[in-house]
Length: 441
Image (tube, rainbow, N blue to C red; front, top):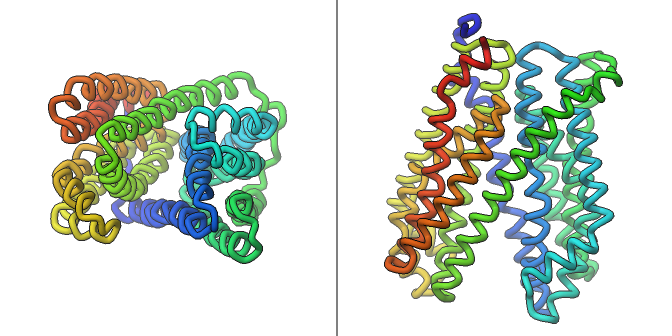
């Protein structure tokens, strides 16, 4: 059984969902650039190093909890596709409660997190105090950060990506504005950057609030408190989030391992790879827009138990993602050296980066499958397969680095890195077989 045949979704549907999300995703690097620029103009050089060290810790802790966004969007899309308004809101409130519980732990443990995290990075002595100061403040904003993730996942799941764009733009504008007011304006230094980030997270939550209240009034569904605490629903939520948390740890660990291995090759190699990873991040932010659209379309189709619609959503997501991946490859092939020239004027780094650009041209065509399948699997809440794919890819990456980096240097490292993405895509492609039929039968 594949469910009732439908004509949707259409190309217009996937563009309507993906374009706001691509725009939202591409604004994300702005904050890091502004924080770095502001910190880089403080009198003490240690400020920039402190922000870099503290941001690395906060990213692992907070971005590591981004599974809240993914699980919320997948489960919300399924409930919305089934036209179960009550269940849609129950998903939101359960995720919000989980977010607040996790945030409370982070706030209470922020001094321990800062101490352990900074000690693992081991920055120079004069940087330690400033980095801890930043983290002590930044982690106070954990409730806002995690609620923002849940709200964004909710709106993506019900097919309203423009709200996610509004939230991101509001957060970025307030963050940048407060950076400039608190640091060069009021002289708050590193602590000002942390408070500015919290201000941005508050702006995102406040931007989401009127849309949430309006949707709640429109749906006019009373909250079933007994169903809210249903043990089976909580087991499903916690199990899916546990899978995604393990996946995120393996993912961030692999990227950290890449940076570590690049550092072993010398300062020039580290700098060149940092430039290329910015291009990789730009590409991934763009492709994630179609992956996010796949979450919505696949989740809603599965919620409606419509196999034909689900398969069409998968085909459309693949087509548009591959098209954008080809565009990125062409851009890197034709204009890669020009892009690098905008990012650095150091001849040695430019030369090293140019020698590695062929890997960057190949990367979108290899990476696209992992990104798109991730969106499809989030829509289906098939989190165990996602977890296993990244763990298998991380192991493959480690072995490939051990085999290839010594004889081939940076080229061996990049070959291993692309294997990491390839294994994820292949694993999920194989895992997808039979899942649609099983979900709608």
